[in-house]
Length: 149
Image: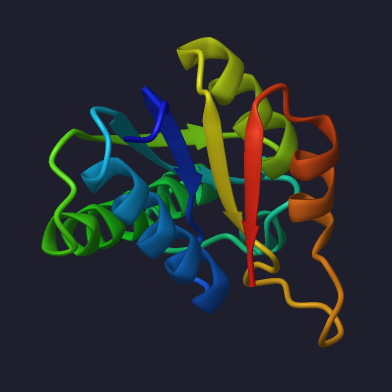
């Protein structure tokens, strides 16, 4: 029996995040743990977005709302996949912020004792390299951190 009680997996829809989800779901199914599935979306002000360069005839949603909705869809998809893999204690979470910082803050907030991340995200880096978010999370996590490739 594994000793994990609170497992956090960060997902962004990338191939590596889905591999991380598979591992986290397997760990949760083999233990008496709660699995938190987290997706982090960036904050963009209207000034930062291209919407500030034009004056649309119809109101357009704020970029934060669009990113939040995409993150929610990512979490919902991941949670369904985790359920198919046998996980039962799943919590779905969407947060806004810088990915590494937000993942680490949420891990501390919930008292995670296991954090699972993909080795690379949707931003992509050279093959064989560790992504910047995975590197930051793995080097700063206060709990067991599993980086999945």
